[in-house]
Image (cartoon, rainbow over the protein chains, first blue to last red):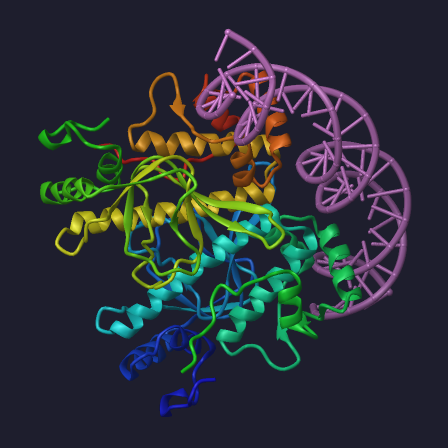
Length: 239
Length: 239
DNA sequence: CGGACAATTGAACCTTCTCAACCAGAGTGG
DNA sequence: CCACTCTGGTTGAGAAGGTTCAATTGTCCG
């Protein structure tokens, strides 16, 4: 648990996440706060980034959920990665002039330009770590899709969600909000909605997971993690 | 096709790849050449990087194939990404002190420290683009595993290999070398070796692919690409 | 109350896995 | 020069996990 400094009081989920990735200087936090003032809203299903279109510049997701997505010519859809509060969008070195995939809002979303890190080494470090963590989650996704059963995929994914939302301070004792339909869950895990439904039922039956009304409750996250042999991709350093 | 400059004559596959990602200055090319002099060998099955161990610093693969790998507690194995000549290993910003996954040599491999890019902006740019392209291939892998049939996975993967090796100048008219066993192919594509075998047979039957003696020949790559609706993740700019 | 969207369930089907056996080629040692 | 062994490729038959199609229920909202 983090010792509370004077600036920690009213941290938004996004800045809380970044400040946990790397200890942020006060000016860096201030820059973040300033950027958040310029936040814009986006309705669900709108695209934050469109495949092949120019990237406007790195942005940071303040609230709501989004996901990278690809659609095959025949309509099959795959969500590639989840974008949660505090995650960066469109930041890949500054190499790509063009978005490699689309990013679509799954809920209403607020998003702000990511403050430039040129004058803030601590912020730059947070960005770089965020980028590395992002990559680690892509690898985790590959492992899930390649070698896990439906039950394992679902359990592992929910544990990942918990781990990531925890970092942004969005997990409480009785669980966390997860605004995903069973259909979008299927698009994440490479399964059909029908099978998601049945898998969810069996996890509920085993007492591993309760997913109701857009909220997830896990009786024993640590137990479930060891049960499926999961190692977290990132844990915040003790400070 | 690239106009040949005086330094282009004897480019190694690795420097050819990087120079195609971004136009490299002569000093940058020289730095690469110098680094290649310090190459070390590694036998097949040795690990270039071990999960959880400290990263020695960014390195570049000069020859041979390697792959990122994760193994589940019960022995299921998944290759996460392929590492081909000219690819960087252990370069993720400079954020990670510790390797997130293991990288194992699939063949005998030569590898050299990646020359620092501090004094070479063009080299830095090549690194950043390489990083972005690497990410794009992870996304492609997620799409394959999540939503493609065995045939599509295999065809798409082979096309990706071709695309990547082409960049390093390792593709000739009659195909390219691919030192993969059917078992490792299964570990890449999330399938069993048995099913790889059958899928390979059906692709051969359809005339899409000939995989024999560690060498892949594709009668009509472009045709196969449109047949499965594939868009290349990266194509070198015309210069 | 009607309409839309999401969740739920059943039954048949299909892709891929599992288990098992057999074959081919390369290297090794007698 | 030939058994021996090891690794990788090939094939068959049955089983399992997940999909497809289709129908039903629940729920939110105007």
